[in-house]
Amino acid sequence: MIIQVKINGIDKEWDVDPGMILLDLLRDKGYKSIKRGCDEGYCGACTILLDGQAAKSCVMLAGQAHKRSITTVEGLGTMDEPHLLQKTFVEHGAVQCGYCIPGMLLSSKALLDENPNPTEDDVKEAIDGNLCRCTGYVKQIEAVLDTASIMRGEN
Amino acid sequence: MNNLKEFYYPENIAEAQKLLRDESVKKAIIAGGTSVALLNTGSVEGMVDITRMGLNYIKQDGGFVKIGATAVVEELARSPITKNLANGILAKASSEIASRPLRNMITMGGNIVQLRIWSDLPVVLLALDGQIKVQGDEERTIPADDFFREQPLKTLAHFDIVKEVVLPKTPETSGAEFIKLSKTKGDYAIMSLACYLEFEEKTCTLARIALSSVTPLPRRCKKAEKVLEGKQLTPELIAEAAAVTREKTKTISNIWGSAEYKSVVLENLVKKSLLSCADKAGIQI
Ligand SMILES: Cc1cc2nc3c(=O)[nH]c(=O)nc-3n(C[C@H](O)[C@H](O)[C@H](O)COP(=O)(O)OP(=O)(O)OC[C@H]3O[C@@H](n4cnc5c(N)ncnc54)[C@H](O)[C@@H]3O)c2cc1C
Ligand code: FES
Ligand code: FES
Image 1 (spheres, each protein chain N blue to C red):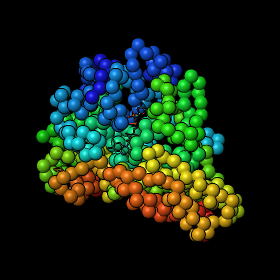
Image 2: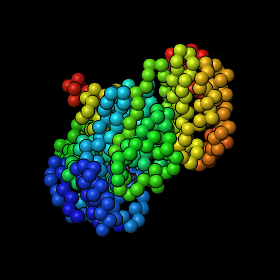
Image 3: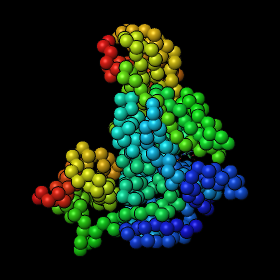
């Protein structure tokens, strides 16, 4: 069946098998920033933004995305012009292997979009669903808090 | 793992039911999808997506709080309405489910229709005397006690749609508590329980003790409730109610805890949560 999605601001019409897992569909369509970790809703590697809210694409069917808007890291920034969150993650050394980072960035973006002034606990809650096997989360939490303060014009 | 060919996006319940009743294509309901996406849906060929029918409300209506079936648990965790109801135990239980991205997806209806051993919301409905409104051939209202007596997914007809959950507002002289025991916040429950006490003067006039993850289905322990009702509560009486809960509950083992372990912890958690209910009702024990 045909589904219409707005992905990273661009309208698409895709002829899809609606029972496909959304993660598989998006990766097939070339959005490779979205990663497969557990396939069961735990790890958060597959996180996308659905109508601005973080969601796990491994526990969604393609048909559920019809007429909704999706953001992936491809729509966040580019190599030359990274999103402030991406820049700050790099500056804080918050990335090691990088596998969890796309999901982590999107969960953080959803947080900052709704709350420009998050506490450390708010950040922890927002990225609670994004497991990182390399780092200890500390630098990622610092990076998100730092991004928030830069966005508020504080440093 | 499925044979799906089509999705449908009804705009209202009548349309959704028409689709479900038309059996030329075998169809099923999808809400948040967090369960459906992971399960084998067998010969189902069409999914009726019920999340676009305006059933995502949380509202007050006279003495009741009404929650549409597709309200997501993140909204239940945040809404001032749920936070203000019965010491906020529905909001608390919702906030402890899984993680933020999943809470953005999981719906009230999905959580109570397909009971998993870890489902956290049914005990809250049991403790707060919730009513579940179902649209079948006619609209019917099912008390939580009856709704959870069996796996709802089995007792509901394929065209039945859970529309709304109704929770009565609780009086000043009452206290409610929800406790989830899990290894980390958001992990599956080793057990969860919700208790509710109502008082007149110092006498406990109503008690509800609801348990989850310790028996195959969530249930109340009415024998233990009877221990409290009509009496002025003392530490001994609360200890007795907790002991009766333990005695009358045939706990099951699973990967999160053995039956023996759960029995011991259950007694302690019932005690703790009853004391907390009394405290919240302003009753000194
Ligand atoms: C990794 C993970 C961890 C989780 N942890 C927890 C936890 O700790 N505690 C907890 O409580 N839950 C937890 N959940 C959620 C739980 O397991 C279910 O996935 C969830 O409750 C299903 O809700 P849904 O809205 O996604 O339903 P769906 O998957 O869309 O539907 C589930 C079933 O209910 C039926 N259905 C849905 N809505 C209606 C309706 N209105 N009327 C009639 N039938 C309906 C569907 O047909 C389907 O059979 C977790 C889920 C995941 C993936
Ligand atoms: S792949 Fe989706 S949460 Fe792990
Ligand atoms: S950086 Fe390797 S998993 Fe997070």
